[in-house]
Each structure stands twice: as C-alpha cells, then as structure tokens.
Length: 116
Length: 107
Image 1 (cartoon, helix red, strand yellow):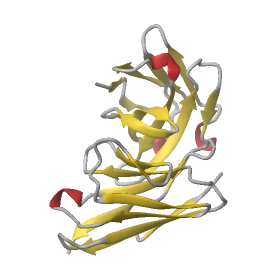
Image 2 (tube, rainbow over the protein chains, first blue to last red; image 1 turned 30 degrees about the horizontal axis):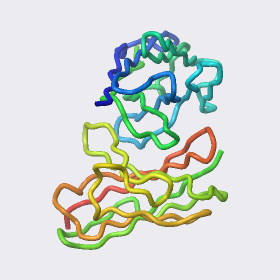
Image 3 (cartoon, rainbow over the protein chains, first blue to last red; image 1 turned 90 degrees about the horizontal axis):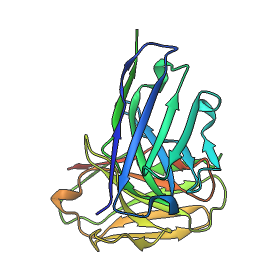
C-alpha cells in the first residue's frame, strides 16, 4: 500500500524558513518523481515543485523560484521542501504526491501558516 | 505556463443526474490531463488520467474524454458520495497547472 506522510508544517513569521518532509512507502521511491502541491485556505490546488527520481532535475512554479528548494534522499524514501523568505501568501496546506505524470497518490498534507 | 480554464465553478445536481465538467487548455496538450476529486479537509484523489483512463479503484460512473484543448469529466449517475470538488490538471509540461475547481452541490 502506497503511503505518503508529510511533516514539518507550523506557524512561522514572514521572512522565516521551514523545511517540510514527506516519507514514502509502498513503492520503489527512487523510480518516481515527486511533486509538492499546496492549497491556500478556501482556495484551489496549486502545483509548487517537482523533483525527478534521480534527484538531479527539479522544477518550480515561478512564485517560489529562488525561495524554495526541493530535494530527496532515496535511501530514506524522503522528499523535502526547504522554504525560505516565507510570505503570507505561502500560507497553505502542503501536499506531497507521487508524480507518475498524473499525481496518483497524495499525502494527508501539512499546514504552513505565515503570520506575525 | 499552460492555463486550464474549468467550468462551471459550481454545479447543483441531484442523485441520479448525469453531469459534465469542462476544462479548456490554453494550448494543445494532447491527452495529458488528469481529473481529481477532493472532499473537504481531505487530500485530492485521482479519478482519471491521460484524459480518459480510469484510475484503479475509481467507480466506473466516472469517465473522461477529450484531446488537444478541450476535456470533459462526466459522472453518469450521481451518487451521494460524489458531492465534492473536482479539479482538472495538465501534465503536458512543468509547471503543472490545475483548473480552478468545480464544486458539485446537492440541488
């Protein structure tokens, strides 16, 4: 059974940093890309970032380029999202998803709140 | 980036109805489209991939069609469990993009 478990969310001040983690199980982790998708309160889904299975190629939506870094540790079946210079508009539930082109499995999400 | 325009934003319907949701892409994306269902407070679930392929475990009353720039999700006979929000998504290229969502409400 595929499982994805995010952690690391919380309350952070504007300009602060946070690192999200997503531990995967139930599939050959290093074979698949992984994506991060966020959802602001009461809003729709927004794709944020992706990383190829090898970890050598990454992608970002324009609004987080230069502030967020996605990485992975295939030995730990874990993908990370390092977020810095956080802004109020980054407030959202962050989901990690198995990226099989379509996002076929999702974690339960972790809430990031950026507020003073 | 490829824009996905989804309509309607809200849809009122009754159990047993046939409903259709539409997504239009800003450029041709072949059949690189997925559809998701999301219930309040839960993660999205994949229903349809590659425009018309039913994800394993998804009910057969869900179907998808389209190619190029026009795509539809159809629910053949609404069930009480289907009242939720639905999103289309293109995966033709990164940045992936989602439609704005369609909230399916009980009439």
